[in-house]
Length: 251
Image 1 (tube, one colour):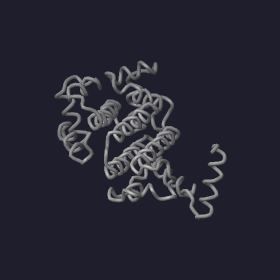
Image 2: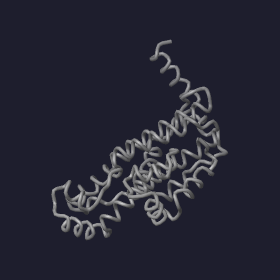
Image 3: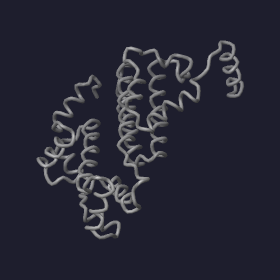
């Protein structure tokens, strides 16, 4: 059967059985909550890990006759759409696409439907939280916006206020004062916070040692990394990784 004949046959069957995909306005409304950083609303949309047949419902579309593979395909579709929408609404491109790759890779190793649902919930919350954390750059000057973008792109380097100011071709003291005035935070504190957030994701999705993670993000020593991590996240890197691996989603 040609693709057109198969398409027409499928559409006829769906009309006869009154089956339809999720309404566009409902789907758009859901994804819009992600890009708006609406954490509480996204939490309400979480699917229970026990609801393993949810993607078998006609409104989601049947992408595979195999139930687990169908769920995998829907996961990839979901994270791909969310990634692109978040990039369009301000999430740093390399961060978004790398995070998407990590989640898809993690999902590919899971063997149980409930685990995939849990990971999908986590992915939704992760992207939504990152959108909520995006500085409202529309109220910032061009210099501060450029500084934030530079920090996002070079988080794995040894960044300082002086190096950022030099890269932008502005005076260090002026840049430091302007950043603090407009954002309410010191630039050095912002740099440290962004490095720790990125390091937390690496701890969750890789088996790199704490020393390797510390070195990758340009911390002077492992002990300094641990100190900064505890201050930002509230727990040590070891405690953070242990908590994550204890969530039931083993590699």
